[in-house]
Every structure is written in C-alpha cells, then in structure tokens.
Image (cartoon, rainbow, N blue to C red; front, top):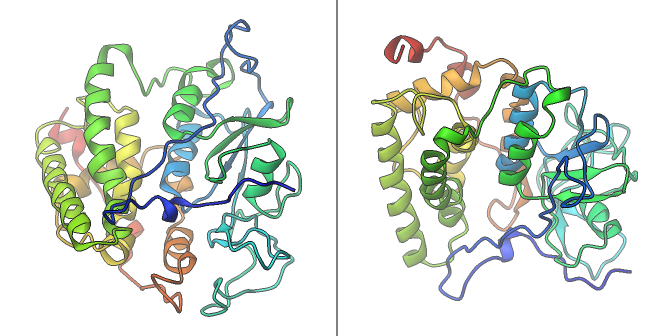
Length: 349
C-alpha cells in the first residue's frame, strides 16, 4: 500500500490565503536520441489520459487533433466529476479523477448530495491500461512519490510508466516528435522564429489568466482574491487590445500560445465568471476575444475536443465545499456562439 500523502490543487494554498500551484514532477521527454531518453517516438506506443473538463488536458487533446495523431496516440477520458479515489478506505478522503463506467450506477457528489450523475458521459470508458478505478491508481502503479494525481498523463504502454504529466511539455512533444505518424506534420506550434515571442506571452498569460482564474477561485483571503482579480482584469484587457492589432496572441501565426489561451477563454464565461468570481470581464463583451475564439474553435478538429457539459459538470459538481448541492448553472449556449461566423482572416489577411 502506498504511503504517499494524496493531495489535490485545492491543497496548494499559502498561509496568506493565496493559491500557489505546485509544479508537475513527471518530466521525462520523448526523443529520437536514445542516449538522452528511453522514450522514443513510435506509433501506438503512447497513450494520453485526459479529462474533457480539464483545461490543461484540453491543450493536449487539441494538439493531438490538429496534428492528426489520433491513429498514433490513443486516449482515455476520465469522468468529469471528482470522486473518492479509494472508496473502500474510509480513512482516505482524497477525491480526484476516476474513470467512467457505462455499466455503473448513478451517484451523488462526494458529500452525498446533488445529482444523481450518470456513471459515464460520452467518451468516458473504463481505463484501458490497468482497468484502474481512478487516475490515482496509475500514478501509484508507476510508483509516484508526489501524491498529486493530475491529468494529462502521457503514458508509455511499452514500459508501463508515466512519461510526463506537464501539459506544456506534452504539447510540444506531440507537435514535434511524431511528425512521421501525423496527418498534419507541417503544423509547428512552436516555430523557432517565434519562440521568444511565444515564451514571453506564455509567461504573463499563464500567471495571470490560465492560473489566474484559479488564484481567484481558490483564494481564501480577500487580499489574495483582490490581487488575483486585479491582475487577471488587466491581462484580459491586454489580450483584447493585442487581438485588435494582430490575428493571434503571439503574432500573425497560430502557435501553442493560442491553444494555451483558448482553453481558458472557452471556460471563462460558462464557469469562471460564476464559480471563480472572475466577473470583471467576459468573452461575450470582448469583441476581439470572441472573434478570436470563434476562429480557433472552428479550426479542423478543435470542436471535437470541446464538451461543455463535461466542463461545467466537473467544476460545479467536484468541489462540494464551494457548491454543496452541485447545482450547475444553465448559462448561455456559448459553444453555439462560437459556431457563428468570424472574420479574423479578413481583418488580418
């Protein structure tokens, strides 16, 4: 039995009440060079464990789709609602990602309230790797010593272990290391000529927007929340201004920076404005951002990675201390709005 203390991002709160996300720890790479990595690029060898709800995992799903790697890299999609990961151990209170069971029974949230929720949503199937109940089980099988059981996971089916669980690194590997198996090998989301610009944009967007929404939502002091929402609002306005001057966030070319930004913007109005109190701004009232989101959503393959039902269900039903009865707001048909015509190409030919 593992003696590692299980935890979640909800535990990453400092004494000042501010959310301080810990870094991922599984950081191996895939490389053609056997002298620097035991993980070589091969078709059919690797598997992604994701959740449609998770923005970090969504990055990987989008790159897999845009590159056309569906036949080379398999995927399993966790159930959107966190559950107790050791349901037979009354002393273990950890809650996290579990796998769906289409033949299972409906269930309430972890406090026995809300729902009942279906045992599986579209795409939620049992774990094909180890028939695990929870994502935690895969980490424990790989002898994890960190105790934070996140998605995405890039899993090696040959060596039966985790390669990497840091989304920013996984998407770069998917973009560059599997081109011989990709249907769209020419797509480069991290072009060498733009790396300085991409890295610069990624830095402030991650801190104040991608992670900034969590800093707002998980803050446990007014001071921490105020600092986070102020930074997020300023950056949101900065994004709106930039997108009024150029087609994409790092320049005139679509890059990983756009994927990283899009997955947060997709969830902003339907989830973060309500749940994380980020109500100073919205995508719907930001014409440049909305137009930009439409273009990315309508790129080949992206819409198939979006499941707003699972996104909203995860956030509003996984943390009972924030939403005791797991009531899911109806919201607007945001995905429908993203399907409407954009004119980014005409604005920036």
